[in-house]
Image (cartoon, rainbow, N blue to C red):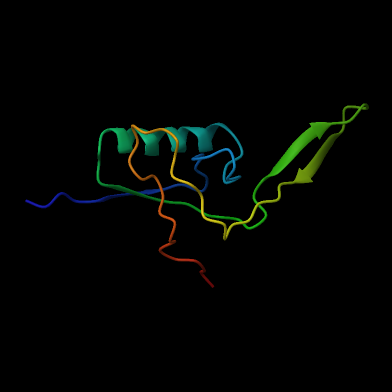
Length: 101
C-alpha cells in the first residue's frame, strides 16, 4: 500500500531566520509543524508564499511611533540544508513552481 502525501498550506512558514517568510507566532507554529512532520518522517509537502521583499522589521522611535524597514534578501540564492541533522530535507533547492499569474 502506498502512503498518501499530506499537503500543508500556510501563508507563512518559519523555516530559517534568513528567509523572511513569516512575521510572528503563526509562522513559527507552521514551521514547528513542518519540522515535527520531518522528525516523524511523515509524507508531507509544505506550500507557502515567497515574497521577493519578505516581511519588514519594526522598531519604535523616541516618540513611540512604529517605523518599518524593509528586509533585503535574495530569493534566487539557494539556501543551505537545515543545520538540524535530525530533520529531513525541509526544502528543495529547486522550486516546484516559481510564478503564478
